Length: 279
Image (cartoon, rainbow, N blue to C red):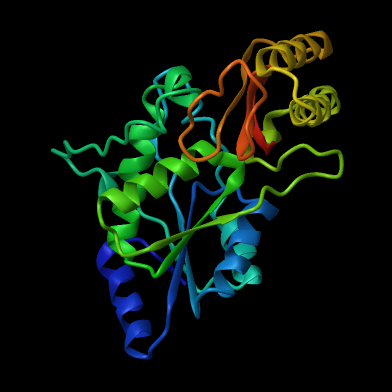
């Protein structure tokens, strides 16, 4: 079932709650892959009903980014969600989510500041705003997000806690292709030649993580990983950096402490790939 208005969404959720059902929500921008579907299945292990949203959120795209080109295919996405066990799709329009006169933005400081917060300063404000709206509109018991967008996950957790939203934020593991590349809707942009080169990214990050675990200073392992990616054909490399897995603070010059993660964002042709690994 697909609904497009908040009223219809709330009506169906209220009917399920009247039956005593727990509700899970999986927010998406469509162009679904197995990573999204794994979150639906994970949601079914925590709730009786799963609602998935499909909404390409213009507020998180800068004017020069790929909002218009972002892959869309509601029919395909709906079929995949149904097969995975999703019972309701919420697919609002831009004018319904951001009606004339809309002037509110949710800003999360701290964990949003480094990495994507520096490279895409509009991004996390757009994410926090739309996710807060979706969680208020649906009022699920749990909401599921992938660890592939790990900094985004921390921003959403902080936002939900700070705004006292009565929802548990659950993380799903990053799903990867056989060669280690993280599944992403933007992988569809890669040419066959670029897709072959893309396998270098997880391989180099695995090497960097091993060096960090062995006690090498972060700046040395990071610099070598950047050089290796550039030599393989990536460019520019926005960052390869280790950060604390909860606060997003940078480690000191000593060995990287347990609980940190290594983050990467690198361009391959016109496609920007991001990923992260626990250290």
